Length: 420
Ligand SMILES: [Zn+2]
Image 1 (cartoon, rainbow, N blue to C red):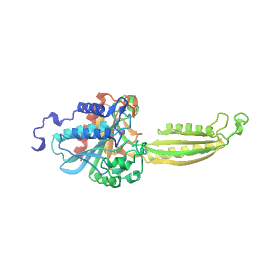
Image 2 (image 1 turned 60 degrees about the vertical axis):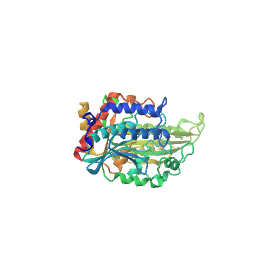
Image 3 (image 1 turned 90 degrees about the vertical axis):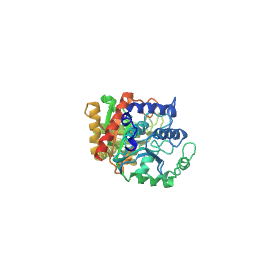
Image 4 (image 1 turned 30 degrees about the vertical axis):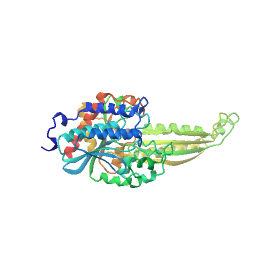
């Protein structure tokens, strides 16, 4: 009989409405009129995690923290091989009510239902990654998953401070985390065979297509470069148009050309920063410092986009008679999710929506990409975001969509378990 004795049939079935109720409860507990306030390493974040521990308490799962501060709930199976479901409870200040916690609470519901059925063949784990948002201490996103994945040396963050001067090392210590020992958490990956993550899309694509769910094929790579254009200052009235070395006209042309190239290659190009010197209405711009951020999910196309942008920038600089220097600021390789998991996820989504599944890359950073980067077969499900809005108190998703997303995750877990 085992632990399933005395458990009703309903207990063994995933109940998506419970997840929506739980999300509302968490919002009431850890949010205010300005949105979600579950900033990592704060008492509100701790309250959210305590609440999650309480919810998990009824089922036969073992809850513990790893050395990096990630919270794990483990349902031991007949084998140590594990299927991991993850996301994050932490939020930015004044964040949305669904970002991250949808995936955690949906995973908790799946774990609860499977625990009611008795000991599974393989071990099931739910992980709440610590400090996914990374907004408090120097912008290190995905601290917890990157540490477990071996992509981040947490000791490099010891001296990082928040805006109140609190050291990351001290804030973490208050949660029982010693940054010098945090990389020992890598051992948690040893038996992981698959990683699944459900997340809100945080963009407008699914809504635009009229689809509630999407399957994520990978995370885009990033090539971010800083450009300096050096021209010559001159009088706005007395310098003929043919005799100018206008750094701003060159910079503007480069921004427009990068955009056109990105459109042509189905990528992204953004010039988000541009400063002009001397910055006076009557002086021809002498110096422009600008960034170009290029993104694509395929490494070859991203390289092509960068090469073409470089060529265009050099050509435009020459035409405008200014000098150009370009240096790399950030480079993140694209991460592809697992093809067979993508296939299973697409089947699940197609069945639930009675339409072919939409496959899409994610432009936002997610913990799943860290796991995939460490060689763990991973896939993500996206659920549509109302108006594409996220990282805002206006972030929302229809309850029917949320319930469908929970069903999709539950069905995907069943499919993957059957194969492990
Ligand atoms: Zn998130």
